[in-house]
Length: 258
Image 1 (cartoon, rainbow, N blue to C red):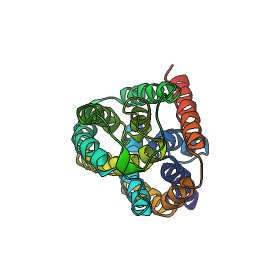
Image 2 (image 1 turned 90 degrees about the horizontal axis):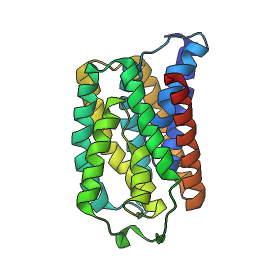
Image 3 (image 1 turned 45 degrees about the vertical axis):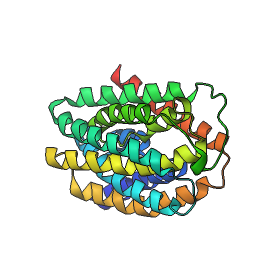
Image 4 (image 1 turned 135 degrees about the vertical axis):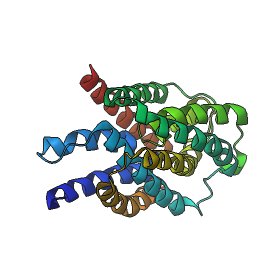
């Protein structure tokens, strides 16, 4: 790889992973379109949808691991939520990631567009009766949580994402989880999901190791910075930022699909 390619990949990984730690997502909602469109726009190597999903899957694993470790002592992780949703999503994401090899690049992009659209719509659904509280006080329907996580895992595994950009809206609007607990717990759930996604993409032969390595280095640096900064921002600001990011990505991907 040329120096220019390494620099662009590092910057994409850094920006995506910083946002990953900040709003509790794996970062693929940002890195997927950036990897797909920015390198060829700058005259560098173009990556296929399958290659982008493979690189993203490996990078998300390290970004969410770094973000989760940064928050492990902050008492905002709900371990019961992580257990139920994490177990279900790791199974679904492996099935989706390995099965994605049988889909065309256009089909992978279409799945991504549908996911981003659903997530964007859910972020603007009014939340009623949800109070900010400690992780120990949170209650939720465990079977609904596990079922939703399994479905999200299959779909997000196809595009090499860990599904947090859809998990966070589900936790906020369906399970009624407080914003800070949802963001922190989603990082841990996404880490578990990325184990399935990354393994599936590796077995499917979709991972380019050098580009993935560059983005992993960026992830380990940037994700903890975003995670620490998230504690200083108000829940409403964090939710608004995530909504804008998901909406913008959904619009961009649909413009290209159509």
